[in-house]
Image (cartoon, rainbow, N blue to C red):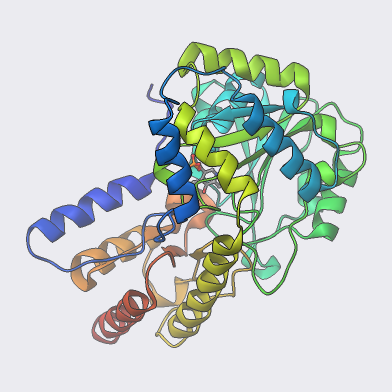
Length: 383
Ligand SMILES: Cc1ncc(COP(=O)(O)O)c(C=O)c1O
């Protein structure tokens, strides 16, 4: 158990809540979830499903109609052929990370993963006794991944490569050229790829998502992770999915049977509506995140010691704070305790997150502006 890591966002949230209980005001920019409500057509489908009795166990891999809807959606958006037996529905995106690493990684196997990156990758790799090989995402490359560096890290022990685009925490995006270079570097090696595409619908400035699954020859080595949490503001419903070769899907399904039995049935009925129904709320949320990103990045760049690139996707802003002269963790603590702004230290996302903070812009423009004011004032007094 000592090898298992955690996700700091929940700890910072608890600390912020404790300060609020003492009467302090905190602007919450720590947690990575949309502040929007689940679209009403999806809520209504869930309520109707409860009334219709979708309150029982279902198949471990997911309801056939939802698996088919996901197969159609992923087939269409990634330009590949996907059948429903290649889809496993699970309670959130996270279980796909958990199950994939549990299923594929033995003691001593190497896994290459982005750093800074979603902390659950490293946590799970270490938990199962694998060797984590971080690949550093660099600010000067807009936090995309350097294929040449990837080439230097792959060896005979490499079992899995984890990609995440759009990326948490940097907002970096792997475009088509990046992905094709990565695929070239992987070549025909017997290496699996876990492609975490949970933010695939949150790309800004009209950019289009490109998946490694779309590169000829890569589909059968790719485990695609996507879900409903971020796209449809459904974090609390707990529903995500993996798309992979049918023989692998059967193994992940066995892990589902052993752990959760199935994803909640009424949730899955709502999921069918989310995927097949009106998509205008998805576009609305993305446009709104883009507007907030623009305001927040511009504001941060006016604050002493902060410099921030424009993230291309997801809803995070990842400023460089080295010119403040502070380390990331003490700065995040000070901003929470003294300025009333909850953010995460870049080091919550791995060693190469030092020198950065992560702010989530999943909050109202008004609150974001208040946070900027508070940070600015704090910087003027303390730097
Ligand atoms: C990169 C990444 N992958 C997966 C997840 C997990 O999402 P879910 O809430 O659907 O389990 C998150 C959530 O923050 C994430 O940022």
